[in-house]
Image (spheres, rainbow, N blue to C red):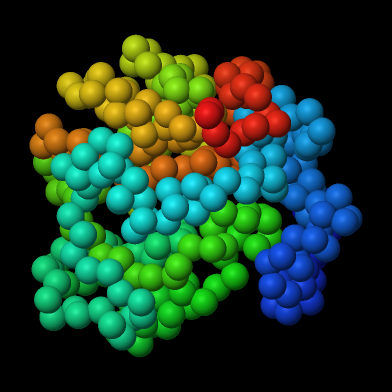
Length: 310
């Protein structure tokens, strides 16, 4: 019943508020009401009341960052194109996935100049990507459907209902990168490093993200944690030979923040930067057992200054 009520309220909010208001007005309206949709969604997902006055758990601190983070560096590092400059300055351009094209619109893409395999994404959004292999895309879109999808991504009111400020200023563009594949020809594993106050405390490994998604979690010594986070565990991963280097790089990239998740791929003994993620899982992923939510929340110190370490 509560889920149904939440869905109805979200729909009404979308129709009457999201479609008609700019972000500042929309945010002010929800703030005046005490962020009711945010609180209801939190109660449904992690499964407990959201405490914004004194956030303790990891998920609460993610929600707090969503609502109150105004650091001007955030739109720069979340922008999938601009973050490349940040990475180049911090650790070097040798860790960047080759960029094939950047365009302001779908029609500006020169598809004739692209190889048979690549990944198309937009600069502002998570999950807004399409993989091309052998001239075909993983969504089975025809040309008209592909254009419509990308154009919709470029004009959508992205993450309005989550009240995330830092994605709103990002310039909407299409970028195309080389497609990374492992030795089996599959999309490589993600190595996601949770960096708290300059120290890697947890590593997440995702398998087959576009097929049968599995997820393992490890400490920095590569001991698998007896923990699930949204997805079931997969087969035990061999320790990456470049683990220590990835940890050092992650800590360097996250050094300006009290918390940041830093994502890498490791292909043919070469490390590639994936992305910087300030709010993993949107603050609604359930830790099982749930005490890990508190444990990692305590690792993320200084909730009143969740952005910068200096």
